Image (cartoon, rainbow, N blue to C red; front, side):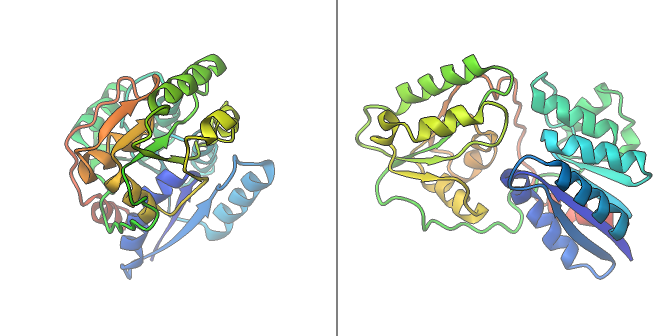
Length: 288
């Protein structure tokens, strides 16, 4: 029986990997387990725990997701200790944003590259990856999804997600100002604000969420919510304000009539090809 270890460090990637785990659990020829670096940045103790789990579980394949910096170390460690590494969401973008640099590094340490789209495969080939290692599998974003609208206000609302610029405190502050300009003074819309990821400078956004000037406009604040409730908020919002990549992926499918107000530079150069669903099943078959 093939044994597979799935890693996660962020709420968004866990939501994208949950359908893969569900497909793996349906099979009788694999055993799949999680190792999570959530909810905070990895500590020395967490890294030691990962190493212990890796050697005790001794998986045939370690599935490393996306582009978080927390995933660079486990990809490198697993590679150098002789484990097979598969990279989930490989090649999704080719900019020089820190997330995309992380993604490229993870791909370098990976034996199997799982790309959503043919365009992503081309990105990987341009980066020097061998074509035979690359599998175009489609998206998992809409596999086995559940939508829960229980957190949605009963009136029109903005859904706000603002992640920090990890390379610039000044640009993060500029993004906060731009966000205020976008949401202030619109009494017709309630505001639902989800906390940022834990990239550098995130504390600036957290403190802003508690600031009196913003608090007078913000109706609901959530630090973290289950994916079904998040998708419900996406599906029902009037405007999506901020810089979450999900505003370009899930929002465009679930709620194409919502107005998107992009803040800052975070998604500059992002190319979103037409979504092909069914990725979770294809990935499970490949890993098995």
